[in-house]
Image 1 (cartoon, rainbow, N blue to C red):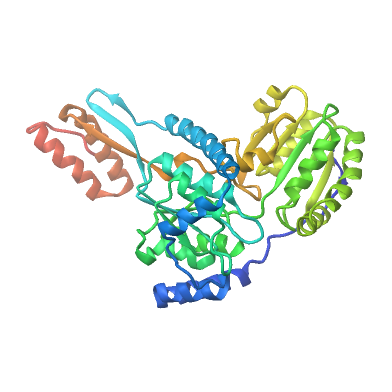
Image 2: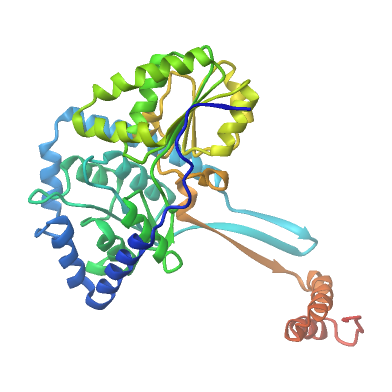
Length: 431
C-alpha cells in the first residue's frame, strides 16, 4: 500500500458555475454586437486600443527588435517541433482495402480549412505555445492559420511571440486575447475565415469558451492547470528531482506535481530541498511555486516499481518524467500520460520549449483516454467505398434482411431496388 509522505486534501469537482456564467455573458455580448463588441472587450480586458489584425509593418518591427541569438533559439525550437510534426504526419496515411471481391473501401486524410491558435499572455510570454500550435497546423496542411495572443497595454503582442507566429507560418495574427479572441476566430470576425478547430492553452475563461463553443467548432481539448509527475528510484539525483518538481510548480498556484518513489531516503531528501529552491526563484515565480507545492503537491512512497507504475497510471499526469534504472521497462509498462520523459538527461522543460514533441497535452487525468496536440488533430480521417454490381448482390441481401429486422423498411428498399435492377427476374430471400 502506497504511503503518502506529503498529501493534499482530496478535492471534489471544482464549481465552474461563476466562470461559465461570465463566459456565457461575454459570448452573448459578442453574438449581439459582433466585431464592435469584441473590440470593446479588448479595450476592457486587454486595455488595448491599437490594431486588431497585426500589420506586416508591426511584424517587421518585431523581427528587427530581436537579437540574432533570440531568433536563432526560436528557429532551433521551430525546426525540432516541425521535424517531429512531419514525422507524425507521415504516419497518417490514405489507405484502401478490397473487403470482398469487388468491394473496395478506403480512408482519406483531409486537413481542415482553417484553424485558430491561441497563445496565452499574462505574466509569461508563451513563445513556445506559438511554435507548438502554428507549426503543427502548418505541417498538417491547414489552409488558413490565425494566431492570436493578448496584447500588453500600450505595447501589443511581445515581439518574440510575433516573430515566432510569423516564422512558423501564421497567415493572420490577431492582437487580442481572452473570450473575445476565441469567438473572433470561431465566428470569423475581422475578415477571418471561420475556424474549423481552435487549439492552444489559455486561462479558465478561454478554456470554458472553447468548451461551450465545441460542436460549433472543433477544439483540441478542455485543458485545466498543467501538471507533472516524477517517478524516481534509488538511482535518481535528488537535486534534479527537486528542481524538476519546482520548475513545473511555477506554472501556477494550482499546478499539481507529484513525486512517486520506492526510496524513502530520496523522498525525504527531495522534501528537504524544495523550500530553498522555491525561495531562490524570482518573487512572482516563487509565489506560484510555493502555493502549488503547499496545496497541490504530493510525495508518494511505494513498495516497488510495479506499484509506482500503478500509482502513476492512476494519476495519468500530463507530463511524466522517469528518473529510474531500466528505462525500457518503464517505456513498455506505463500506459497513461500526455508526454513521457525518460532519464535525467531530459526534463519536462525541454518538451515545454524546444525538443520536438508537442506541449499542448491532456491535463487533469485526461491522459487516460487521449493524447496531446499532433498533426492528426488538424486532419479529418474520412472513409469512402465503391462496389461492382456483383459485389452489391451479397451486400444488398444482407442489408435488406438486417434493415427489416431493425424495422427500417426504407433502408431495406434501397437494397431491394438495386437487386431488382442488377439481377432482373431473380428471386431473393429479403426477410
